[in-house]
Amino acid sequence: MILPGEVAPAHRHVSSAIRFVLDGEGAYTAVEGEKAYMSPGDFVITANWAPHDHGNTSHKPMLWLDVLDFPQVNFFETSFAEQFASATQPTSRADGDSLSFYASGVLPDGAPAGLNRSPVINYTYARTRPIIERMMKAGDVDKRHGARVRYANPINGGPVLPTMGANLALFPKGFKGEKYRATDGTIFVCAEGEGATTVDGKVLEWGPNDVFVVPPWKHYSHRVGKESVLFSISDRPAQEALGIWREDTPSH
Ligand SMILES: [Fe+2]
Image 1 (tube, rainbow, N blue to C red):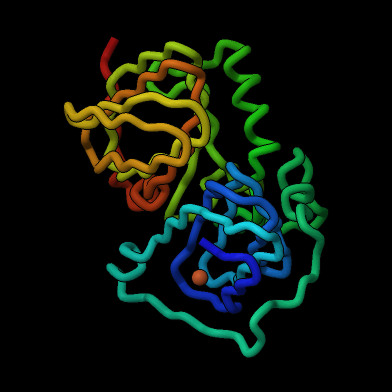
Image 2: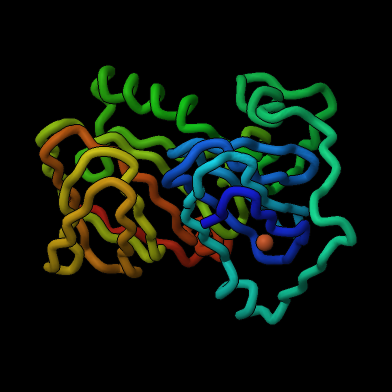
């Protein structure tokens, strides 16, 4: 949580971070020269070694969920961090530039072809939410995962970060999902609606801004009353890169 007037001074570290905005309006994260003003549902990434600082120029606290890949970085004993001399970094592009430049079906001429993480700073809820709505209307609803999109690195279609990947899923009213399990550990956040997820036989009920975790290789299934949206993040990209990710799908 960042309170009105607070600043988290500019720094960078090897661990990558994602942020999913839960509450408040008008605080910002500045990443690599772009100051992204955030709204609930926005998905912000701070890649490995990217300079970042946060500030709140609004009159209300802002709350977001942070997920960092520290366990992976620490496993390899490769953790480094650096503070900058000034509290805030200079801004070199406008809020929304990276989303506009990279996530619009076009790329700036000369964009780096081999970037293994996304150049987009803020995947706004305003942009992503209508897409899962369209998927649902088109009938593209997975029996386990609902109408779900994966946040992609627009350069190569890969995950947003080499260590962590994220999804946004819409569940139609009355959705009763089939059981699923995979080896990635997954953190879910309810962005809208309410429902319950059965994890290894245990029922976890959730509503807006609730956070819950499905550990690796535990069966889980979602069900909702009203139409609901779940954001999720996991270490699947790292496991896939190492060739050790697996999922268990029922054979039909
Ligand atoms: Fe940080």
